[in-house]
Image (cartoon, rainbow, N blue to C red; front, side):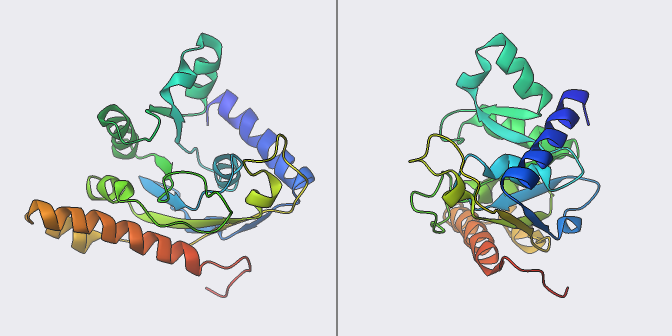
Length: 214
């Protein structure tokens, strides 16, 4: 980890432990080496740092490109391995930045829902994450966060001291769909993107806020 990243990571872990009494379940399921896509539900600004603080390897985050306009804050975001993307994260430059991090063996957090949930409930998946999965060789780890909506949703100015949980699922391999995507028609390719997104949201929904046996 870069020094600034590590200091921020340690501070975040202390914050979640003291203010939110966090529980971290199965962080060992995130591969220790090589490219990884983390696919998580999204209900709060707390979600990215919560997910990243739970694992011991550096994570690459997405951040709106407008946030990089400030030289000082832009420098800090780069120290945190943030990838600049446009507002909806669908631009070609943002996708290239994400794939560059994956091809370099990094971990990237993506949110299949595309944006924060307005009510804390799981939302329908968008196909964009399917495109990223197909264009990479990375395993995908489904992750579910609990309690972050109650702690800091859109209606709250500051985070409240609510308990939060982050649970990492078993890595998923989309090798079969990746192989089909190389030769299929464009209409089928779009179906594959959405199918991957739907499978990921199903896997996220199955994660419960308790430790399991495997």
